[in-house]
Length: 113
Image (cartoon, rainbow, N blue to C red; front, side, top):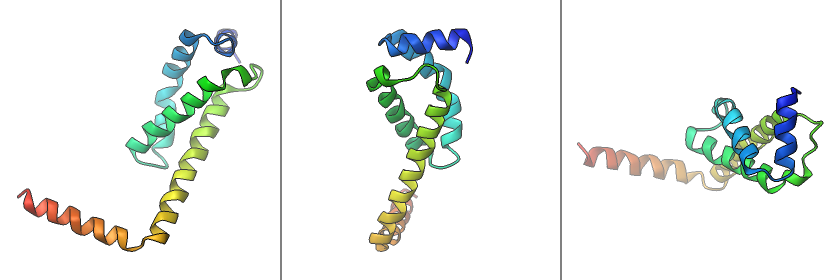
């Protein structure tokens, strides 16, 4: 880990909001691009917000010697996979939902013509 990154992580651990902002801006694009491999754009934003909120709420537990980048990407991946599993389970429980949704969207499309 670079000295500058180490310093920012130490500042975050102490509760420095500016350090959090730097980290957020530094990793957001990469996390977003990574998450789009798994879920749609709206879900990506929600997942990244949740992960970043978790980092801020748990900043005192961060271990500066460990890779924040690895933590962020692993957290985003796990939340994406959880989202996919949740969607699949929902579709399993309510198989008619997809058909219903397609009919409603088709009717909406026809009414807008």
